[in-house]
Length: 154
Image (cartoon, rainbow, N blue to C red):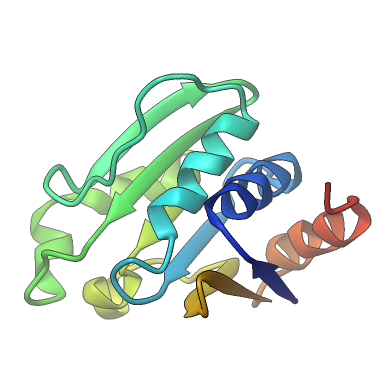
């Protein structure tokens, strides 16, 4: 599934749509270069779940935890990892076992230690906007995509 995101508002709106398709325990990899809109998309998801607080990238803290709405959401950023073993050293694997929705920026930095994604969202700069490409690899990921396709884009 490809989604054109012509500006920041479109990215936030798509994140809010994604929020309505999420179920507990879904793991989503957010992939893309710096500035591709990963944290903006997470902000849209959180706004879609009626979270009104500050949303920042967990680049230094590694994880931000949100207990909101009908879901617990964990937002990870592994950008600063220089080797995959840092994921194990940080003890983050326990966060993926509690049924929370896990949104992971820079998942490749955790290598083979990270649980597989249900849904992968690749974000890329496209002109002055962004393009999102969503792929699923599990039944939970396919269910999420099916819900997204059934929603109206507005």
